[in-house]
Structures are given as C-alpha cells and as structure tokens.
Amino acid sequence: MTDQHILTRHRDIQNWVTDRRGIPAITRVRDRFGEVHAQLKLSFDRTDRAKPDLGRQEEGVSPCSWTAWLAELDRQQLALRISDEQDRFELIERRGPAN
Image 1 (cartoon, rainbow, N blue to C red):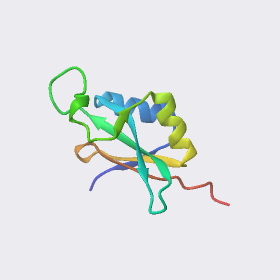
Image 2: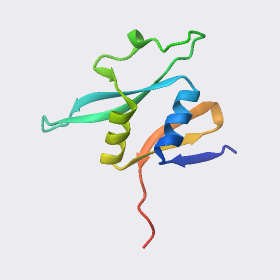
Image 3: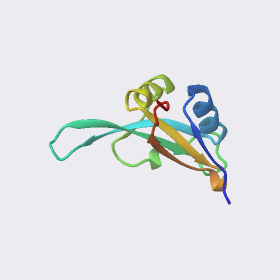
Image 4: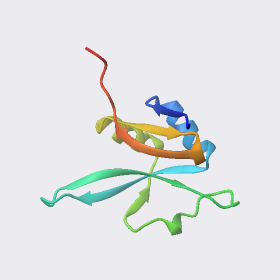
C-alpha cells in the first residue's frame, strides 16, 4: 500500500519538488475554442548532474519562477498529490472546506 498526501501549502510543494531536483514550468495550450490557457508542469532531472537539463523539455514548456507557478496553482485551485512510491505526483483540483 502506498502513502499518498495532498500538498496545498506553497512551502511544502516547493520543498518537495526542489528536494527531488525539480523546477516549475508553464506551457500554454489551446482549448477546442482556440482560447489559450496555462498548464502547469514540473520538470525533474533524473541524472547525476547538478542542474535540470532544460533542453530535453517538450516544446512550448517554459521554466518559470516559483512565484509565477504558485500564483497560477492558486488561480486554478489546484493541489499537488504525491505518492511515496517512486516519487509520483499529479496536479489535482483542490477540495473546498466541508460545509
């Protein structure tokens, strides 16, 4: 059984990603109506080098500051769900407080 946690605090998210040599990135995607929306990404360096290899990222993905990434995370009301199994993660919708 794997342990899963949902992170919403900016400090917790940033620490989890940087501890795994990750960097924030944003890509712009068009919806079916042609409107452009921001899509959050995280890029991880799986090699022994000190810095992530930004040249290997998919086209259209731009590294960005943590401030910009976290602001977009809040704007979209997303959270980071992490799993202890092989450092898996996904961005999910935040659940509001119980009424």
